[in-house]
Length: 545
Image 1 (spheres, rainbow, N blue to C red):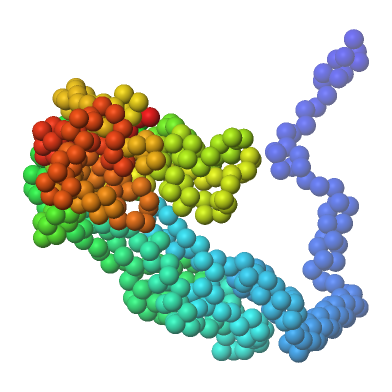
Image 2: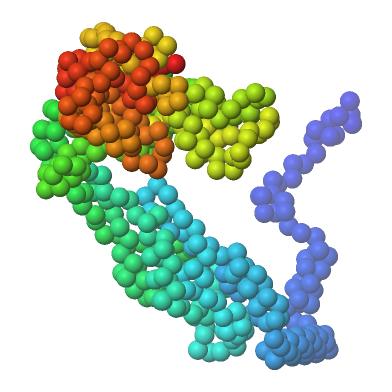
């Protein structure tokens, strides 16, 4: 209790301010003063030591820099005197920098062999070698130029561009004569031909198509442009072509429209006729098909006018494909058939008649056959068989091969299709047909055994009001020749009326219906007088055994 009282009764000390509470100890204050004096006032000895250190460091740095610069200068001098190309330099898209000039030249030549230049034209682009355009590369000169980059004050800009990717300026040679020659040969492939006004068949009717201007290569202007820009052309790999417009020859749609009104409507009907067998096939060509064959050109009958022309190539391609379905011994003459189609279209007809032709055949002789029997089986006078196989000896040998001529050799004239005459040797009769119907049926007399009438398919080839056969001293009224018994002899067998001898005597009036002539076909004079004006040249005559 007394202690507690004593503590509470102790005299109270004055309260110090914030600064008094933080007053440092006297020893601490002395230490701080010493440190400030030591930092701000180094001793002379220490200062000298620091100075010498700085001097040594400076000398070392200068020495190092000098050594580096000396080494770099030595390297630059060594590089300058070497055959190395400046690093980073490019040529023809390849880096030649840092390479010896010989290696750089070899790489350039190798790359040049692969260089191509595009000739753009419409939707098609043709690639050609620089040599075809008369451009050659001097690789050695190009590399020598590259070698000067970085070594000449005059080539500072070129050096910067070469390193930046623009490449070395190539040393090129250009021969305009070569360029002109090759461009002229390429011109047909580079041009677009003008398209005349024409038609397109739509729903069986002609729709007029307007003309289209074409373009032709202006070789002279293209070569001149190339000459001025050879380097740029090689760099770009592309030669812009100078094209000139080509106007279509037929650009008046009014004329084409008037011609279109004359075209047949709908499909074409091609009647394919075999005069030997008297068979007929029909091919149909849709309007879109034959319409694609058409173009407008000079009229076939009058060159001063315009008319329809059929593209013979397209028509013949169609006919050739269709002919593959025919008998193997049959064929069409495509050019003749295409001309018939063109004529029909030009005259507004939709029906076209085409003729079948026949190939030669081979026959192996059988035992017992004779030249006459073989010729009779094939429907030929036997001298025609002899002519086709000139190596035939006096007698035939079994196994011997004979060439059988085409029956077309006996049908030299255009066929008259709606008329036909049929003669039967065995029946000694004849039938005259017109449009498939019998017009006349008459008795006849054919050749005797020693001078027979040959079976076969022939034609009315001539008309003579009064023919004369000197061998037999016979006058033959209303004579119509149908075949030559011997190919090279100007003598014909044919139809005629009752013959006369010595100008007055009439023969064989009572012989009709049995063989009596020397190879001709005898008809009564009254009947032959009817046949004579009706049987046009070209009418087929079928003589059956």
